[in-house]
Length: 360
Image (cartoon, rainbow, N blue to C red; front, side):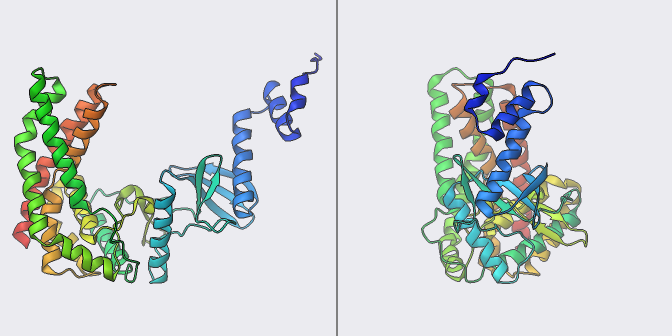
């Protein structure tokens, strides 16, 4: 069969002409070819590398290049956050913490490459075997790695201007109070409203007490001292960003959400994760703490901050705020389920903060 010519093809460059022509005749997938072409251009124009194909992963694309394997990722963070993450990783690596992958610098000198309205990152590939986090031993190893990482932040430039966690949480608490008042004024309660009202009497006082304890415990002074010495908060130190290499050592990624907060915020979040993921081994809480302090010791004042940092019902308040802002568009049963799960989880975190209080 002979097909007639298609004049519209002449409007495209020769490479695109071939892509569209192959797709029309059913020989190749135009979309796949287009993306391959895009990856090649990003690597060549951004980093001066030749692209020979790639394999998709959970985090990005493992690319075969003329200098070996590289992982290309589309950034989900703002430009200023990526610059901050680059500074953090560079400082850690300079101080001997090598269990990470630095951003490759693009040809324009930036730690990312801007293409078609998006920012792309290039790193060495992350080890493929993630940390399972199904036993206390995984958290002991993770806590030790966190201690090493925090210790290596010495000399990091002060971040005095960044918002600290108590300020964010105070705003969350005020929103929680306002939402409850609005629900009461309406007089008619949805299932989601009833869920919020049911847990308000538990979580509002706990949030208020945690905020007061943070203030009375000298959070501001500790933050000032740590920032002058060099500190940061990873904020995403968890299983999806922790991998075990073939030699058994751990590797950490996901620095794109870093902030200039204090170390205890990271550790408290990790302890909450431990408490949730391995409830049958909660008696090993002290081992997890000891693993961290084996790499970076804490003063008594800093250690005591872990009590309010684990007690504050951050997840429940965040989801209440999220669901309340979205309810005019859609309130789904899935959102109700997420909020109910968060309430149950936060109830257990009260036990964690009490366990820490007994230790300290």
